[in-house]
Image (cartoon, rainbow, N blue to C red; front, side, top):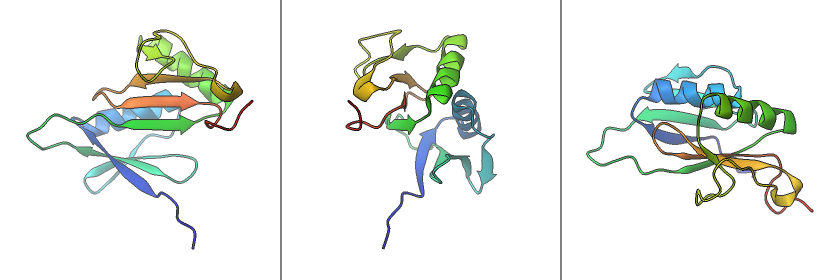
Length: 129
């Protein structure tokens, strides 16, 4: 039996806005409403289901990495820069305004409106030169 990740829930203070923000940055179709969620589908069939965070605690930031083509990286990175969103070459946030070149590809990290650490990469880790 094959096991595939189908969806994951992303806590957000404003799920509609956060889902739209990510869709726009990544150049994806607009999110769709499904029950209490705003779904952002990816091309490999995994949905990110944005849901309103209603606990009395702060949102615990998570990490979401997206494998994109070189052209998709260029377009997403251009949107990040145009919006004035800080980005980093490293997950510790020490190399501001830089991209990395791990495994012969390119990558960068940036935070969404709720502090989730988003990453775009053009090569899977461990899959390069």
